[in-house]
Each structure stands twice: as C-alpha cells, then as structure tokens.
View 1 (cartoon, rainbow, N blue to C red):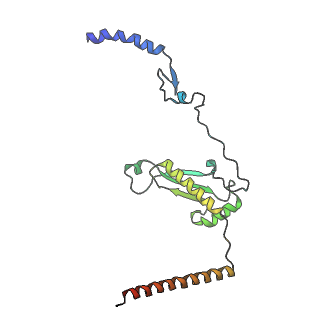
View 2 (cartoon, rainbow, N blue to C red):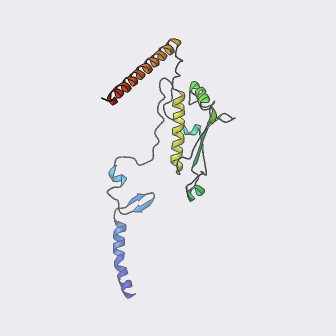
View 3 (tube, rainbow, N blue to C red):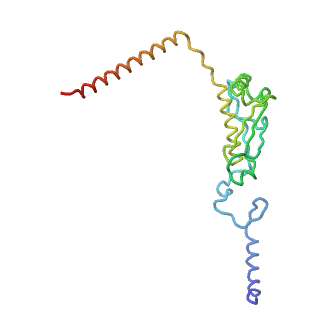
Length: 202
C-alpha cells in the first residue's frame, strides 16, 4: 500500500506532460496521439465531411441512366423467412421496394407503359410496382439487390422490340434448316457405311 501511495505522485507529472502535448479532436473527443495511418495524415488537404454527389445528367435520348431517385420510391423492411438462426427473428432484413408506376415522372412514358406490360405480375391493384428481396441476411445488401432488380427491369423495358420476320425470311430459314438436316443425315450415313466396311469379315 505504501509503495502504491509513494509511486502515485510520480505519475502526476507524466499526466501533466501528456495533457500539455499536442492534442487532436476526433468526434468531439480530445486525443493526444494521432496515428500515421489517420485520414488527416494520409489526406491532409482533403475534407473528411460526407459528400453526396449530384445526380448524373439525363441522357440526350431520354433513356434511363441508372440513377434511381430514392425520394421517389418507398423502401420498407420486415422479418425475413427461412433459415438464418436468431438473426431472422431479431433483424428486419427483407426489403419491400415500391413506387407508383403511372406517376413516376423520372421514367419516360414509353418505359412506364412497357414496364406495365412486362411486370404486370408485380403491379398491385393500386398501380404500385413492387420488388422484394430477401437474398441475404443483410438489410443493406438486400436493398442493393432490390435496386439492381429495378434497374434490370427498366433496361429490359427500354430494349427495342424486335419486329416479326417476314414470310420470305421464314421460308429462307426453313429451307436452310432442311438443308442442314439433310447434310447431317448424309454425313451420319456415310460414317455408318465406313464402320460397316471396317467390320466386314475378310
């Protein structure tokens, strides 16, 4: 006990020395040591504030550029089903993404009409396009998966519709297939005859 009491005053000058050293403020807390790997050291002339870049400029032809305005859609979370341990019962990881298709002005009218045709099984009676994801046990990854599904659906809707082939084209394709079938059968027959000649007794 006496040893502890006698050594305690010796630590006071050390604490005072540390308190008098150069200190840094991180999240409102003073620190007397900064690592060489600190962001302020690696990027001394950069601002460490979070920055949200502006949305990309729309394409000249008005097609989808990949940007989804999050303020125009509704994302909700619920408990996921299936195996997953206790995480399933405690964390809401299932993602429900929806938006009203007819009033989605961030999409062109042709794209909205095409989406209504291709994804009619995902549209509710109220006109909401619903996309769900429970691919993983992570809420963030399921949100990214739902957004990527929406981008895929939009790009599919903007693909040009292939025209029906003409009667002449259909006839040419039919003749081409018949010719290929005849050549395949002739080659097969020739190979069979060659094998039969090899196996014939002397």
